[in-house]
Image (cartoon, rainbow, N blue to C red; front, side, top):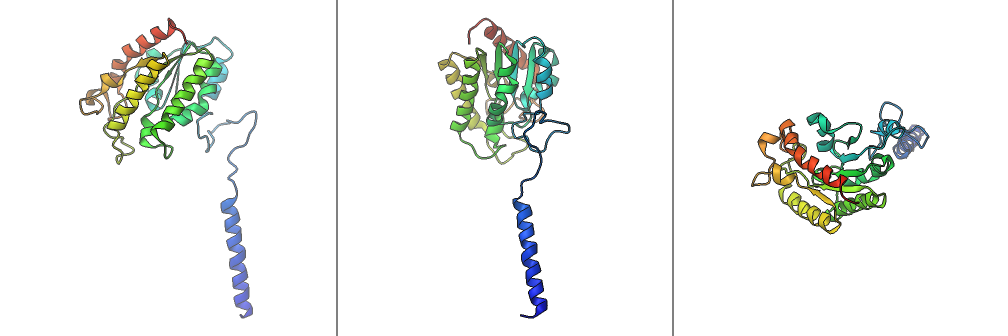
Length: 248
């Protein structure tokens, strides 16, 4: 091997090793600290724990809320779709795109630590869509069980909401969710009955016979529009009234 070839080979080895080291090195996005959520939002925040952290800190200095709505984009969009439902006593803690494992991770800080009297849990749409990767129906059920156990252990009354209907997800057109949603809702209803929880059945109101979202109540077949949220309001109000006069 000539000197030139040896130098070329050595350079390739060194360059390859440097690239491999860079590929394996962790990206310094964030680290544990007393102020973990400086703006802008960190690139890696799997559960969205930074999303409501500043709002929660302000609430902890005042009166405890009456109820907290935990959920995904359907819950997050509720604040805009029906703003009169939410105030200093009824808080919205929805985050768009979230699945039940993400909600479980932030459940303590976004619900339990705020000491509400009741929590309204709506999850499942994005689990069925596979937003955070592979999961099974049992995984979803375990996450619901865990959130309910956390709430009840802290004397918080629980409202379990049905998964809204969808024939297709705009962001996952390859998924056919109708039957999966029906099966999970049947389990949620049964689970709520077994655990003496309040079941908020939005599905029956919002669905067509084929399992699609009623088109007049949704803009995309998966999320309520303002009319959809208006139709949901009496169910939410009735569930909150029942929670306020029941026991955890």
